[in-house]
Amino acid sequence: MLNRYFVSEKFRYKTNEFNHRLGFPEEAIVKVGKLYKRIDYFKSVFINDLTLQPKSNIMFYMTQTGFDTFAMFFAATELDLNIVDTDPDILIHNLPDTLLIDQQFENYRNYSYHDICDVGKIKTVDYEQTGDSYIYGVHQKDYQVPNLPFKGNVLHTKYCTVPKLVLQWMLPALANDSVESHICLGFNDAEDGMGRISFVVQRLDINYIVLPCNESIKKFYQEIRLRNVSTEHVEIYHWNNNELRIPKNDLENIKEDPNVKNIPQKYNVKGKLLKDDTNNEYYFQFEHQVENSIAKIKIKIMSRELEMRTGKNISKYGYLESGTDESIMIFRNMKDD
Image 1 (cartoon, rainbow, N blue to C red):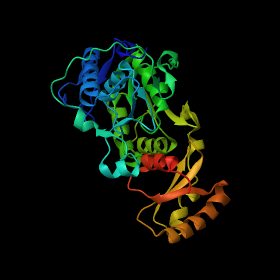
Image 2 (image 1 turned 120 degrees about the vertical axis):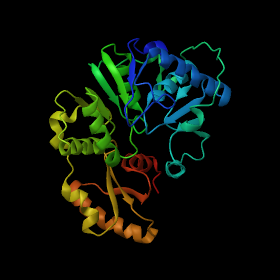
Image 3 (image 1 turned 90 degrees about the horizontal axis):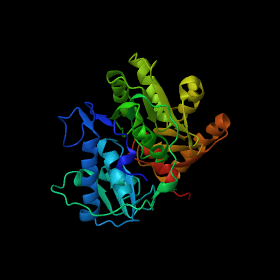
Image 4 (image 1 turned 180 degrees about the horizontal axis):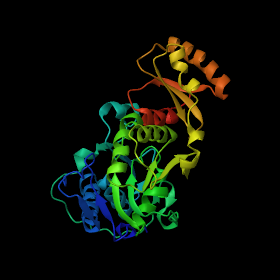
């Protein structure tokens, strides 16, 4: 079953200057015993404060991955909660109100992580795990750990936009005895986050890193070239076409055609053309609110050239305030007109 004993007894969590463990900034290294205590804390919060019951559907949407990401996950599994990525009974998130609305999450029963991470004294939860629950569609008892050759220091970025990475990356890393330290650093937007991540890769001697999409991997490579960061001893994975891949040897294949990227500029349309590599679709994120009739004309003009260059049209569009990764998720889940 997926519980605290699934985690390697050699577990070590290392803080970094961009991501202190909330409430414990003075602790540079945290071992497995502290993880157990934090799991117990969230079990109490889920049962006594949020009044959840076994088989309740819980969703985590944390753009900033951290120590408590691990603790909340195992608190949920030990209580036999179903961890889902859609239609939850309750949502735990770290989003500002504007992004909560953009993601169409405001109608769910939801709590900010910052409101539940320090509720004070907790009560012991007397519940015996059965293992009869699902983690992103996989039954606890059916889960098989992928064989990844982890060793050294592993950097966890974010899992909310690609929940399958929890099963394919986070859990295998946590179970592996050869991992020396777990480091966490999420990001709201690839453009803003890759500079910090490239710094941490160099500063903390990262050996393994996963990034959730092609957009983030492109930005990451741009940053490490700009900062002259060596990745000779780093295995860099990303999620592409519904599987975990190593793009290091075929980086040229994931570079965008600059003519495609510049289509909005060519037609003087303010916004960003977004590529959803998972669904192989293009979206357009307007920089400002645009009247729908005018927006349709602009999208039609840009789609013509996009189709000539890629064979694809702009399938969805709109004005969003969110960053690139979150916007792609919003468009992906947006119902067609």
